Amino acid sequence: MKKCDVTGGKNYAKIKPIGFNETTKIHIHRRCSCQCEDHRGPKGKCEDETFLDSKCLQCDESKCHFDEDSFPSESCRLHKDQPVCSGRGVCICGKCVCHKIKLGKVYGKYCEKDDFSCPYHHGNLCAGHGECEAGRCQCFSGWEGDRCQCPSASSQHCVNSKGQVCSGRGTCVCGRCECTDPRSIGRFCEHCPTCHTACSENWNCMQCLHPHNLSQAILDQCKTSCALMDQHYGHQTSECLSSPSYLRIFFIIFIVTFLIGLLKVLIIRQAILQWNSNKIKSSSDYRVSASKKVR
Image (tube, rainbow, N blue to C red; front, side, top):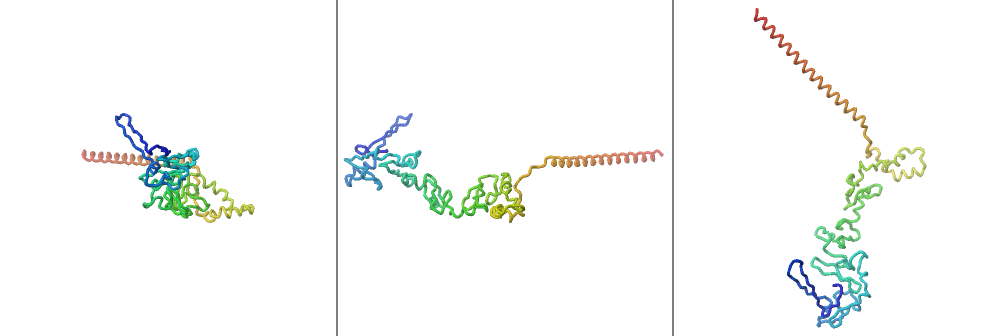
């Protein structure tokens, strides 16, 4: 239904499902033609959209028509690779006429906006701080978030001492960092023991702790970029993992195992000696008792 050029203003379409001996006939009444057929009012316009040019769309003897060549459909596309009127309207006279649906209102120059397909926050579409466009909230100035529920000033709480948002390892959501790297932790996602970046980032600042034979330019750079490290150097914990000494670990395990084995051997030996001693003593007592009976 991209044209308004139907004699009598009516048309129909047949729907016949495959495998069923039934046919549905749908009668179509085009809005512009309906207005042209209305004898109670003027026939000057064929659309109820006020922005359409009356010189483009005209009614003549219950027939609506317009010159499509003078108004190409490209002017009704938001982008070249997108459908005409965002697939939610028709292009008439180079302008989009949006469909009217029961879900809500479709509007915009290219029918790209609506008031129903975006997320809600506390019962309000886009928290009342934005417009719904292509299923995503386009926030007004001063608001952000997927629902426009957060003030833009809240992102300042996600900036670390180096001016990085969430240390470059996360995104700021309503003033709190959500780490996108699962290895990162901390308020600003600043701790990442397995990233092997903390030492490399601060290696240039190590010379600031020993400022001998440094030029004035380097000293000035130390004051700006390494000031925080200088203040909290005594409280910092190294994030770099040193390679373990496997030989040392092997010897420790070997010695502990040897000592445990030696202790077990000594305990067993002592138990055997004690058992033999008790056996000899019992045999000696038996012989003494037997000799007394013979006498």
